[in-house]
Image (cartoon, rainbow, N blue to C red):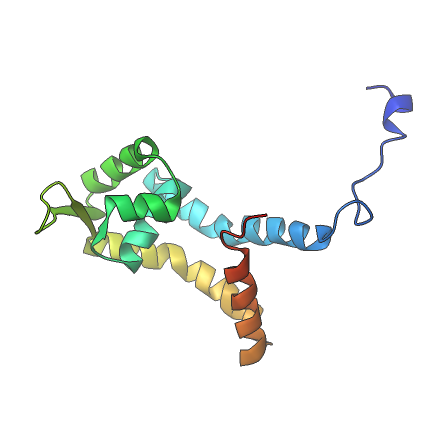
Length: 154
């Protein structure tokens, strides 16, 4: 574009859309929140999808593949590649369901638990620093805000 065409372009601002300051803050907070785990994951040849899968399997041992798909809101195909790598590298183990042999229950291995703790530690530290000057009521308000943001449809 030429300078004459670009000089008339203005920045998007709060006169056009509400909460731009919050949107921008969320972008920067997420970027920084995920930075440390991304570095650790790259040492293992893993990415954010591996982190999410392992995190939820560690949070809810015995999770079925169908439940994990629903939590992550991804396709079977997307999960299959990541899960295969995690199983092969022995971060997750898979057990047949006792009532339904087609059901696959996912459990973290000790190696998987250790990796999730390693990935979550810098995130926990970042959250603790951010919350250190807040009282319990303010902390609860932040948690409530984040809960309201999840799955909130227009």
